[in-house]
Length: 82
Image 1 (cartoon, rainbow, N blue to C red):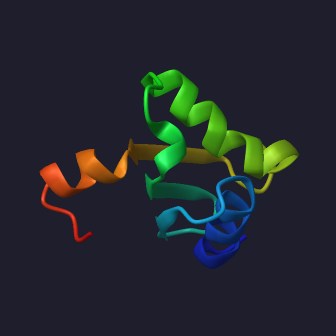
Image 2 (spheres, one colour):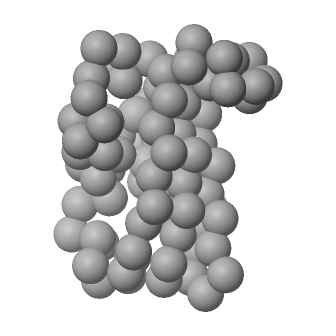
């Protein structure tokens, strides 16, 4: 599975999010996700929203996924582009 495919899967569960996925080996991934849906949610809840789009691929094609999940305001405060 490629980084683009993982990005598309995340976007399927969080339409309108900003998603950037990186990988060195197509099984271990790092994702930065910026979504309005994260407003008022704790870290675990944010990760669950990301995992929802990935479904059964987690633990199979996607062996590991590191997630940084931000609201748009948090992303801007962290120095990310709007």
